[in-house]
Length: 240
Ligand code: FPP
View 1 (cartoon, rainbow, N blue to C red):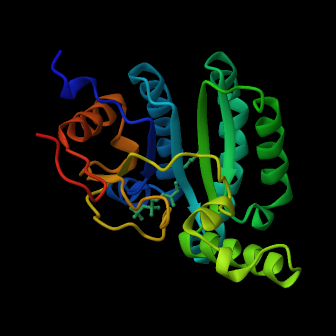
View 2 (view 1 turned 180 degrees about the vertical axis):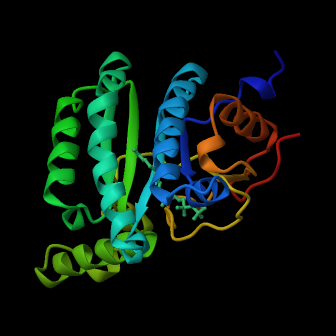
C-alpha cells in the first residue's frame, strides 16, 4: 500500500444531502428518503470503524430545517429516536460515544430524552465518537459562544483583552473535539451551508455526486481515498 493510501482522517464531518431528491425521483414522500438516509448512516458508521476514523460528525438537522413542512419535521424527529433504539448496540459493540451539538433545547421532549439516554449510556466510551448536529447552525454556535464569553466579561471573570481564538474554541458546543480533517457533502452541491463554520477552517472539502441514501461503504471509502491524495499545508509550505 502506498503512503497516501494509509493517510486516514481522524475526524470526518458529513453534510448528508439529497434525501428529498432521492424520494422525489421514486415518487415517494420525502420521509422515505430520510429513512433510507438513516440506513446510509448505519453503513457509514461501520465503514468509518473499519477504516480507522475515530470521530464522525453528521449534520442531521439544521436550525434552518425547522422551517420545513410539519410532517417532514415530525417525521425526522421521530426517526432519530427510532434509529437510536435500533442501532444503540452498534455503539456499545464499538466503544463509540454518542454526542450531540446544537440548540438541543429546541428538540421535542421525546426526541431529546432518547438522545440523552443513549448519550449517557455510551458516555464511558473513548475509542470512537459519533457526533450528531441537531438544531445546529454554525452562526448560532458562534453566537452562543460569544454570548457565554460576554457573560463572563460582564461578571468580571474574563477581561476583553484576554480573549484569544482559543477562548472562542473553548466555548463551542463540544470544545474538546479536534477540528474535522475532512468534510464530505453528498448530492453534488458544493456549499458549507452553515455547518461547523469555525471548525472547518483547515478541513479538506470533498463533494460527492451521490444522493445521501445512495452513499454507502464504497462511496465513503472513495471520499477517503480522495482525501488521502490531498496535501494539507495549514497556511504553511508544502513538504518537499
Ligand atoms: C438533507 O437532505 C438531509 C436532512 C435534512 C436530514 C438528514 C437526516 C437523515 C439522514 C436521517 C437520519 C439521521 C440520523 C442521524 C438517524 P434534503 O432533505 O435536504 O434533500 P434534498 O436537498 O434532496 O431535498
